[in-house]
Length: 116
Length: 111
Image 1 (tube, each protein chain N blue to C red):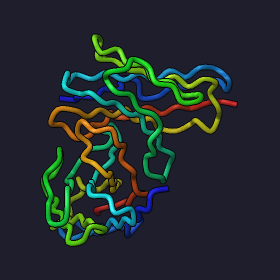
Image 2: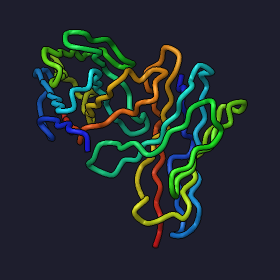
Image 3: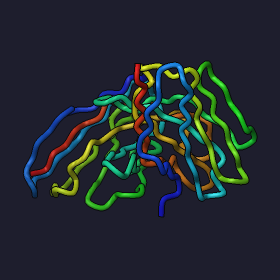
């Protein structure tokens, strides 16, 4: 299994509070991704990173920010959590960019976030 | 607008029979297609993939077929086993698109 961990695995928070989710990899892969999974929507890309300090927006980036200060860590921040951000969040990594390449992405175990 | 569509949310089959999971896409720039499998409380795991230069790829009990003219792919599982019960996601990439996932289909294989 690819070495990907996510923390916390579960979190309950209140509307308006800031939340940071952490993804940590030991594979030294260049690319890292944050997805959210919701019923009826499958997996949707929030943000991704193509190197240290290099990030870009995905399909559903509003309300989220990311940071990558080290190759192994990719942080997802909800500056002011809303109930619509209740979801399961997955981090993924790949050695090459998932665009026209042939490398699959490896996923972490997920973080279940509930915003009350 | 959804670029990758899995129109059936669920499928139930008997153990030993064939499971056929379908996926349609709209973006003609997609040139690589993948299937992921997901168990509850776990992250998705890669199952099988196919490049647009092929129309079939086989790996053990799993075969993916690609029909580019119809923008359609399917995953065949033969024979199906209870351990195959999971949610299956179709995904596609190519052009300027990162990996785009379908909504997923829940497969139940009954003993």
